[in-house]
Length: 413
Image 1: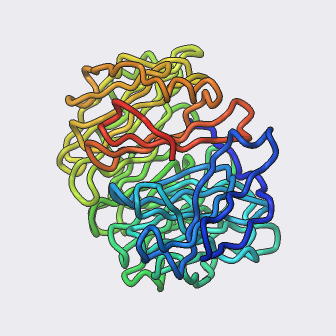
Image 2: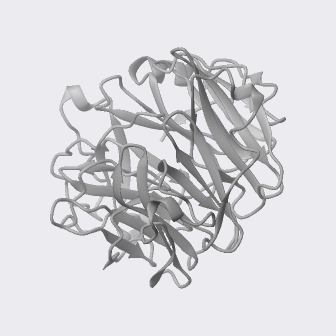
């Protein structure tokens, strides 16, 4: 639902120096309004602030993910190379933790589909099959200092990633596909390195696929596991969506009889589900964003569960806003802690989105939205700390912002 951009080229970086203050890298005037971040060299990253070797670059970020209040990652693509950065000090300084530029990427990476980090040290990146090259998986266990590359045999295109720890994770991949149909294969790792197949729908006759696997009908939207046994996967069919749940680690799946079958959805011309979101790192709370299209107008809703999918609540959110200016579908940190932005105003809810409290319009956020009117992503990692990524209409420049007071005020990173 949210448009993103790709990273713009940066000019040659000045080599960091430990003698005196570093000179920032500047680009021409047309690019000065983009993101500027301060990098530190890995060998000085653990030193006191005044002893770190720093230099600045211009970059264009396409996505991010917060790991804690202090720590997060952000990334984009420059000349087919992934530029991946990590901060551990609220975005004040960053480390370049990019994999080798020899591994080329054709398009932007989306968190939960192409990239996942469980903590500051452990991360996985998928480079999907390109031409004659096979799908590969990059893995780091030292915070990006080194990356190991492995292939995924017969995996096709990876459509979703989910991890519940640095060792336990799942990869959903698609084989051959046609309109409304998609072969689906699920792999699992118990050590973060070796993967084995736990579910597939490719080896059965089309008319005799068991009811315990996710069928070929529809295409994968997203997948999340909340613990080593329980996982959720959303599938988009031609005019509707479906939710599948596993309770044995991914071997057997069953379609939910409660989700996407409400009378409240009958007036929707089309129903589009988002990726299931595990609220809290590992728990029983899950949120599924839903877009109900009434003629050409989107209406936002959400399914919520507090017991790992045994029961669900469907909530219709009262606000939509202009998607081309300062508006985004609601996001949630916990079941009763969510945020939305509507026409540049941030709202907060404490009751699963039934009621919303508007915050006063923030001056700095409003000023930035004049240059970067489209909201790419919002995430809160705690009740206080959240990040916001906004971009220009032409998707050529972006800006990352942070709030430390629950969305009341914002500052640039």
